Length: 202
Image (cartoon, rainbow, N blue to C red; front, side, top):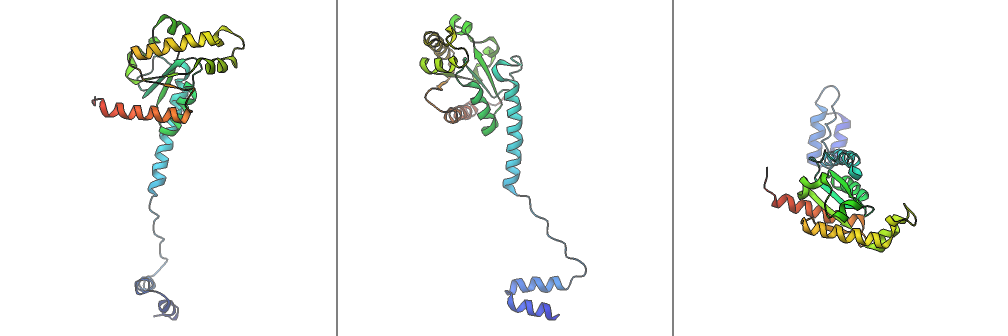
């Protein structure tokens, strides 16, 4: 046994010393052990990849884009204009990796008492957003100052009609005037989870 190994053995535990002795008998360089894959890193990579795909989907299906391509959407957010559908969709994509489309309900839709045609065959995946008239009016004024579109009266009419449509079609809905995007997203995530538990597998 070399003097170097004997000296090191005196300062090591028996188990560690056996490892030193075993290594000293080898010839050539000792290969470094392969680092095991970090489980948390793998999970993060998968989540990041899912989120990236979900964000792409949300961008491609924002504000009624690609209305004939909703079969792959896990959630379809509908609302009268400016109730928060875009930030909600993006947050759900980023934080939960959900494929979310969003579709506006136009004045014509809500006043005539009908849902947008594009979502009629996907009602089981729809979730509505609403607001209060004063808050919605403030948001709309940022886009069209002093317009009928932004008036409190018009906002109140559209919100009332939208909520009636949601109720008639059994679409759950949330008030974006009283909850943050994060809170709304958590509530939608729970709805998605509940639907997954109660919907028979295809």
